[in-house]
Amino acid sequence: MQPRETIKQYFSRTVKAKMDDDTDIFDMGIVDSLFAVQLLMFVENEFSIVAEREDLHIRNFCSIAALSNFVEAKLAKSAA
Amino acid sequence: MDWQLTDRQLEVRQAARQFAAERIAPWAARIDRHQTTPEEVLLAMRDSGYLGSALPAQWGGGATDPIGYGLATEEIGRVCSSVRSLMTVHNMTAQAIAKLGSGAQRAQWLPDLCAGRKIAAFALSEPGAGSATSAIETTATIRGNEFLLRGTKKWITYGQVADVFLVFAHCDGQAIALLVDRKSDGLGIEPLTEMEGTRGSMLALVTFRDVAVPKDNQIGPTGSGLSLVSNIALDHGRFSVAWGSTGIVHACLDACVDYVERREQGGQKLREHQLVRRHVADMLVSATASRALCLRSAHLRQTGDPRAVMETCVAKYHASTAAVRAATTAVHLHGANGCSGDYPVGRYLRDSMVMSIIEGSDEIHQITLGNYALQRPYLD
Image (tube, rainbow over all chains, first blue to last red; front, side):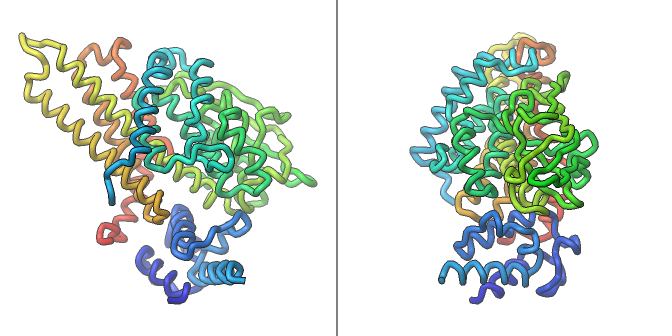
């Protein structure tokens, strides 16, 4: 399964709100800031990546699209 | 989930129990009465390895797993919540550095924090900002290669003796986190006393009057200060407070079982009264449930499961409210003795009230967990 689909499924399971891939979950007030830590644990565990200091911008975690792009970039970098 | 503790975890718990009994318990009443942690106890904590026990071995930490670390926290919290709070705040800052610090920052700070040569404090709360962290007013202004920090932090646990503070501020409207050396020019420390609970935790009012902080001391990226840095640290704090609160419940149970075995009333031991048995039964169930929730939280952390974040909130909320209940009952069971300084249960009650406020008050947890419940996590 592609990262985006896995991430969508996680959002669908944990965020019970209507949203599209670009919806900013923090700006829209759909989740609280604790959710950012959950997302961090989720992507590190699910995709076996380690988010480094420079990765930890909230913009990487604010939507399905942003998180998917971040994970795909990390996976591509580790495969290179 | 495997509830069987490993040999290593059992060893960690036994060692912590012995350390707490020998090095902290004899001081606990005095720590409360004198509103300070004596140098002997601080030295014991520095030398014990508990300050760095959950930190990576690479930097000299003990690399103890979350279950072992939690069990040790419970044992220390069972004898003295003030000293347990040193473990909490030191690790909140150290964990933030370990997770969010640069390679240079880790190399600079973690060896000393792991070894207990330096003590770290967590400086988020302000006179006008407790649970509402977005309301912080401390500012950091960029000046060349440094920040100028201005503001006041309040209720900073072990701030009186900390060597380094993790300080949260706003910089051009964005949240940032900075490591600030105690010896910085313009940094003032004023002891706060006459607190109701954890009276020996050496709280301080810390003021920053244009304190120059090198840009290299920023932890995490700009803008992530309140969302990621503080939440990673507070997540650790809630985990630690949950275990510490579980320690208080066990301490209340211990104290009450001892007391009702000895104390006679109306020609019979208190233990013979059915209502007394009901109270100790409730305490036993609370102690068991609190520890079970803490173990669940620790297990999820150990496996990297993201549910750990909310399940830690569940454990903290349950354990801290259970501690208040157990300590209230314990004081009642002790009667007038419970209100005197001759027995520890009054201290447990005052300490438990602090547990239900710090790292997210009961009310904040009710809101957070109410939202969580609506996601039906119990179906997973």
